[in-house]
Amino acid sequence: MLNNITIGQYYPVKSCIHDLDPRVKILLTIALIVAVFLVHSAIGYALVLGFLYLTCRLAHVPFRMLLKGLKPLRWILVLTFVLNLFFAADGDILLQWQFITIRKQGLLNALHYSLRLLFLVMGTSLLTLTTSPIQLSDGMEMLMSPLKVIHFPAHELAMMMSIALRFIPTLMDETDKIMKAQMARGADFESGNLIARAKAMVPLLVPLFVSAFRRAGDLAMAMEARCYHGGEGRTRLRVLKLGRGDLWASLAVAGLIGLIIVEGIVLPGGLW
Image (tube, rainbow, N blue to C red):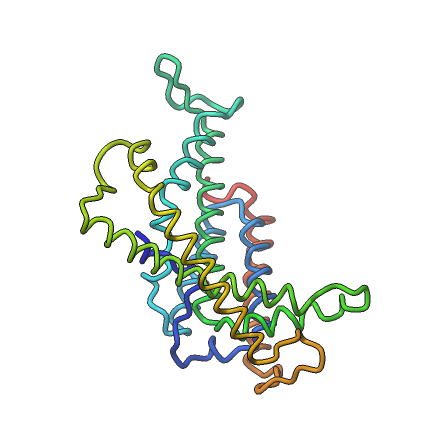
């Protein structure tokens, strides 16, 4: 399961999506999130799915990697679906059995919120898969640089966010190694009910926290040894510049949002 987490991982290949300016990719990811929240029909969700699939093909990232990243969230998706399915107070009754009542509005809400969560995870995973941590840090810092006039720590915040994203796969790999080491010594993480499995995961926390603090100390020492003092007077090896590809990508996302808005006006109910 730990190997299925794609958020924070970088897929190093050569593609037109990887070559886009990180500032543009961050802004377009936010625009894609807005587009997902504008969708209220099956046609709109089909447009978003087609856009993500086409982007994966252009980025040379296997689409199954985005789907694989959804596996750790399957219980959250199921819980989101079930909670919205059974807690709708209005709408036509589709099924009623004893104390269980499923209404049409509840089913629609369950589909809406589950698909929204699904596409939000896929969109953010696509950002990290096509953008290295250094590029993410530079892009976020440049986007937040206007806030420096009010003494906002843009560089420090961007550095913390990039380090957090960078260490997600590292901590997952460390957790996997600790689990395998304890399983070799007789630990059981797969049998029993959900509560028993949760209790079996408790012994993982102590060595994982120790490893995380050790890595944090090593990173701080390495940064001090290299005389790191923040972003004041810092230069970059690669200067960020907007290109023609950034314009085409922006137009593509704008076109997607436009299609979703037009579809919502022409077909308010869509295929629901």
